[in-house]
Length: 180
Image: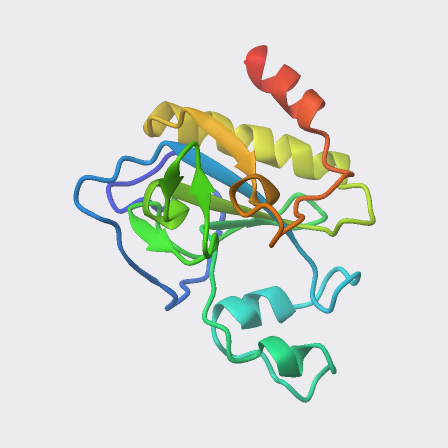
């Protein structure tokens, strides 16, 4: 995998979300934020995540969708349950994934982070192939950007967010990245 000058990764599916804007001029990408998402909650597969990131989620398709259909959110990457990788926002742009957030005293994490969504939730184990894709993605991103930390959404928005949740294998990820 390679990253071009605009921040698009090769060897993955590209679906351009309109939900992004310019990063501050002095904002180096130093943080990767791991999220978990399933739409509807607890259900995997289908196109609802992409529909949310593309502002075309049908509020009538599921009762949960009515509450979130108007949100304007995105992430740079989504790793599906089968390990498939989708990029929605180029890395050079600011995706709208973190919301109100703070990392080590620095607010507005969207300014200096990349958002990586894993299709999952707080109640299920992630698929082993998702970790393989995540590690490969993080290896490429860390070679290209000065990423100094990897955090969960819950770490940057404590009390507001819980993802990637208790089933995320932080220790195994750290071990696999250390042996890279």
